[in-house]
Image (cartoon, rainbow, N blue to C red; front, side, top):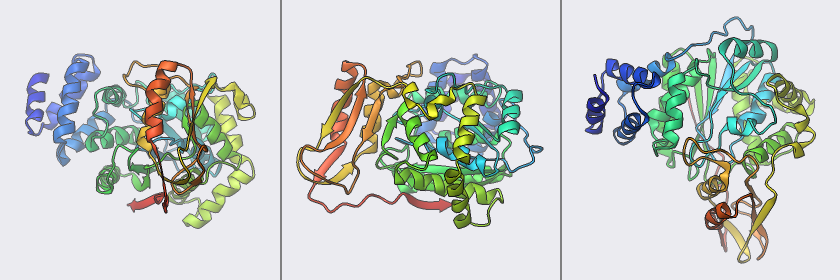
Length: 434
């Protein structure tokens, strides 16, 4: 076999055999196929897709490219959650300790930022000293001891996905249904979980902008999970405007801590509770969503969820003082306010424009080699449906490089539209897929 023949065949819309897919991924993971050839293949898949047989093999090869963890002897249900990515989507950070405090083991393997969307690992690593790289034995010890690990895919856990994930971000191939589904599910199935809850984002700031596309992605991942014996449930949630108020890395940690202390924006809290309640029900901790939501609220009120986060920060080498002293987190020293040009109603608060603006400030990556600036980002002060007066602040941009600010500012200004109204925010939850 050779890579060029396979690229040409997929480019022309023809299927690859299971053996060819296995060879391609193995050779790339072993550095015998260069980035530029795999990039061409990813673009061919982006354009022509993978059929059901190809997708099954592609996912399985990614899954078995490394070690598959086994937590069957942990003694409690092992359940994880994953999001397809959005702007201001820091749900995993407060959710995981809340659920773990209620008796579910959460082996959360997360990713880095893709395009205009933030990455859980990038956010967590703004905590001084916080480690996200663990080999399987250390990962297991952390989960057994603390009931929660917040980590990235190691070289031994779905290593093929680790390589391809970074390449997709830099080649414009992120919004591909088969590539998204296989990436997420190969990592999650490698965790040895009992069940999985998916947050599939839809809208302007998501990789799937139309509901039918998001539904197809959700169905694909739910079916992959079921095919591997893992109960999988997907919630399709809105990403037309950012989730919460903060878009950045360190600032989203601050907002997550606020949620764990009983505060935080109502939209973020609602999504955390929807997903967390499903995890508790799937784990048999509570009989239904209503009881599960009460259990989660109790973990916040008692301080158990915050204590679990403190415990995990310390266990993973981080500085737990950040929970009470968020000034220990990075923060850009310069700020620029965007103000309303007229009085009226906020008609649009565009997640895509604001996500790209944050990326241009340095909060995201244009190429896979780019370094994240943890202190830059933006705060959204108003959302769709809010009444504003001329001169009111719509958003505040935190920046450290004036050239980057000049790139971000037009996008952030374009994100908001003020009109005469009326306007209502989009629903947070669109559908469930089981």
